[in-house]
Length: 77
Image (cartoon, rainbow, N blue to C red; front, side):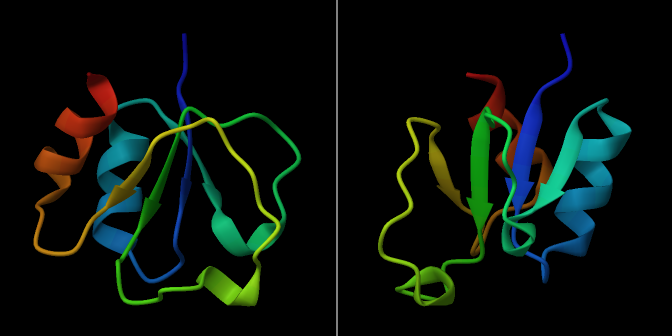
């Protein structure tokens, strides 16, 4: 089954890697209305886009200092 991953806009190499792995990648800023399996952030923003009311049960993965492969490993667990 295809994983749906929300990824910050500035993480292009990670987006491309996840897409190559068969994931459906959605942009965090697009206001996705579908359940996601994981959220990948750069770790640069403490308050993502100024939104304090976002609730998700999906794991949030900080990509700072990680390769796309390491992010994938975190998602695949």
